[in-house]
Every structure is written in C-alpha cells, then in structure tokens.
Amino acid sequence: MFRVLRLTAYFLISIISSVIVIHYLAYPTLVSYSRLHHVMDRFAYTQETLLFCFFLSAFLFFLQWEYRYFSAIYLYLVYSIYLFLLFVVLFGKASNYHAYSFDLFDFIVKDKRTVMEAILNTLYFVPLGGLYAFKAKPWEFVLIAFFTILGIETLQYAFYVGTFAFSDILLNFIGCTIGYTLVKWLGYRRIQHPKTVATENEVC
Image (cartoon, rainbow, N blue to C red; front, side, top):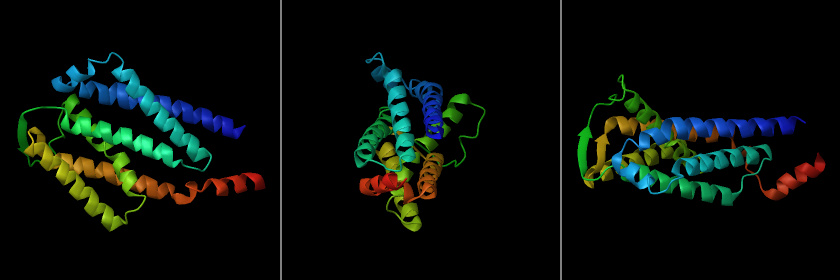
C-alpha cells in the first residue's frame, strides 16, 4: 500500500517538475534565441517531446530508486540524450557572436529573462555533476568540473557562438556541485547488483 502511494507521488512529482522546468523555464528561454527558435519550429512537437523525455527520465529514476537498482542502460541513454541537448543549448544559441563579461554577478538584475537564464545555467549542469560523483573524489571533482566549464566557455568565445562570462562559470559550477552533492548524499547503497536485490526481496 505504501509503495503504491510512493509511486503515485513519484509520478506526480515527475509531471510537475517536467512542466516547471520545460514549460515555464527552458522552452520560453530557448525560443528567445532566434537561431534555436527557427530550429525548433521545424518540428511541431518540440516542447511536448522535451516534456515527455524529462518526465520519463525523472519517473524512471524514482522507480529505480524505489526498487533499489539502477540500470546501466538507463544511465547511458539518459546521459546520451542529456549531453546531446547540452551541446545544442551551449553551442546552438547564436552564430557569429563574440563577447566576454568579467562581472561575476551580472545575472543579479531585475530582468525576467536574465534571471530565468541564470537558473537554467545552474540546472543544465546538475546532471553533469551527478555523473562526476560516481568516480571522482571531491578534489578531483573541483578540478574536472572547473576545467570542463572553463573549456566550454573558451570554446563558445573562440568559435563565435557565445559569451565568455565569469558569471556562467560560477553558475555552471554551482550546478555541478549540486549534482555531485546530491548523488553523494543519496549514496551508493541504492545502486546494487540485481542478484543482491533479488536476494533481499526473497528474504523480505
């Protein structure tokens, strides 16, 4: 009975979070870039597809969390899609755009679009930080995350597809740290071999 209630709660949380992140944050911000807007307009169901992918990823995560087993196939698929979308967002927003900003807190302004983009710049990198948590020690994580983000910002500037901004480095690193901390906090006790789970179920 309690498991059914938990699964129902996971289902509702997945729906609500997908609507908040995609419908109210990501999609409105992404379509504000003319290049991305033009690309997404070629497919009539871009927003619905993103909503479904986010919902499915979140619900399957909760489902595996409930049953104390994470499938490697699930992780590979989710991260493949995530890294592809991250690449599109980071390098597909603009063309022939070349700028830099050394203001660490330029996102603290009374502008809705700027604030929403700051939130997304943090959320984009939460899954990446979670990925680093599987193997990297804290000091390794700091180095890997920092140089990954620094490399992304440099490439955006060098190839005229974005701004090299200290604020982006800060927000991206915060996102990575959140993801890293969450996975470490959840612990590896939930990620078990199927035989271990089967044995526990038999005992129960």
